[in-house]
Length: 133
Image (cartoon, rainbow, N blue to C red; front, side):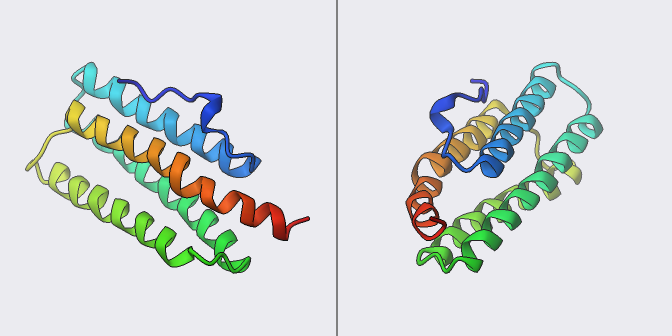
C-alpha cells in the first residue's frame, strides 16, 4: 500500500504538483519506517517532517486560494484543518506512547491525500486558470 506518485495526480499547477509529490514521498518514508520496525523516536521524526511539510503546503495553497477569492475556500480550509487535527492528535498520542503507527494509519493518509487531490484540489484548478489568464 505504498503512496506512489502517479501522473494521474497532476493537477497542472507546478508548485502544488511538486508539493504533492513531496507529500507522497514523506508518506512512503513513514511507511518504510513502519515496515522496518524502526524505533518510536525515528518514526516520530518522520511524522514531524510530514506534519511540518503538510503545514507548509496547506499554508501556500490556502494563501493562493484566499488571495484569488476562491468561492469554496472555507470548505477547503476545513478539510485541511480536519486532517491537521487528526494528525496532531495522533502525533501527541504517539509521542506520549499511547499509540503506534500502523498500516491502517498509513492507509488513511494515502487515501486522504489521493482523495483530496483528485476531488477537492481539482475543483480549484479551473477557477485559478480562469482568473490567471
